[in-house]
Length: 388
Image (cartoon, rainbow, N blue to C red; front, side, top):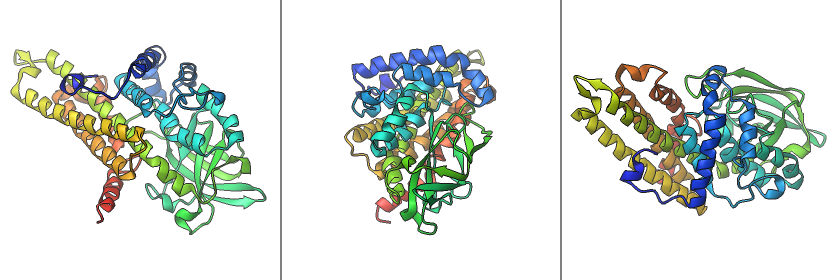
């Protein structure tokens, strides 16, 4: 990973994480990197990668062995390794982090025994790809303004509404849908419903055409009189907002980890470029401006890495607060935008060409300050924690 190991030694990982990293890196080299351009073109990652990831033990690492998982303790360092290696391999469109980091806690913490038996084996094998549907066309970050409704029909529920910007939306076989059971009651009426592929009335809309993360299948989802059996209610009705608030810190930490990894990659590829690119008879890296720019960016890299690794340590002890996660996401993603932009500038005109990795890193980075809660929402959370 870039010169961060030379400027600030990391102490986060143990030998088992290093071995896990090597194995996941091999998986990407064999089953992802050769298809990278094709996935960018098609806008969706082949399901075969998910099956290979399942075989390798990279899905549901902490899911109990009885349900087909790795059976390990909750250890977000393994999730961190996956995020970092995806960035290094330039396979940022792969939706495994959403599957592991965001969806899994809902299934392992809220699902009853029957639901776990039904869903978790496929979750861990890669046969069931998952998504979570919160965002709606008119709500954005306002979860209390969700308009998708679920009304009782006997013992079951009738689901109606629309969701947008849903990661894994095309591939997903199982979608956790956030819906309002008591219109007008805001957070008090939210509940989580598991919608499965093939349920009548569940339709996928457009595969959205994004400027970055083009290999990631982001989609619109529509629900028209979808009959959701009571067996597919996740947790308790009316507790949906509390469940979301409990799991959002890990989602935001995951985004911060991805931002730190993207900074590492951007600096690495830029250092290589300025050492090889000649201008006025010498490498671009020999100019004082280049050295000073990279010196500043390396300092920013070290600051982000220190914050993110420290946040991971807090999370491992179950001490990462909503405010801490917001700070990590805000700072890491905003610094990512800045560092990647400056690295592109150091590439000159070639940085604007998509054949150069820095250009792809640039367009991929832009969403980081938007999804998982915008930077403005992060500032609001932090500001309120200050008593303001």
